[in-house]
Image 1: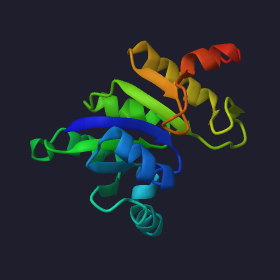
Image 2 (image 1 turned 45 degrees about the horizontal axis):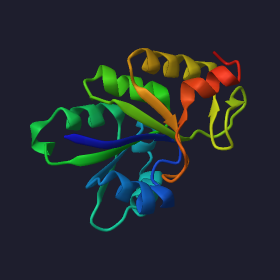
Image 3 (image 1 turned 120 degrees about the horizontal axis):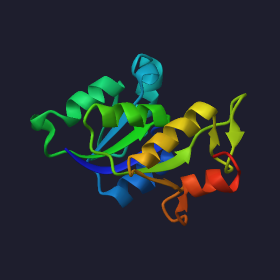
Length: 163
């Protein structure tokens, strides 16, 4: 399986993914990977309705995503992976998924999180996971939409004195 793009966006599949990122990445598959959402049939159905015709979309658990990535029968897939948080990215890498770069596009604000851009808020756990990903040589870039200028996530965290 070829990885066309990896994005953290807690909305998973939405209009920007369906119309812009899928075309920019040249993918022929979208895998929205979340243990929580994979168990929620209604949310799963709603997410799958957003995908463009001609691009097959799946909503699956992290373990299923790892299994699919490592299965030779999915060799022809050019996949856009969507995840909701950096810990799940770490799980994917630990499971053998060869991720080199992660776009961070949307992580909503919740109590206990610090807002680092208009669309991204991080907890201390998220920051620790991003530091681990960075130490592995993974590119971590912030862009909400494809035409935005890439911002280095680690530099942003340093600028805000969060690391």
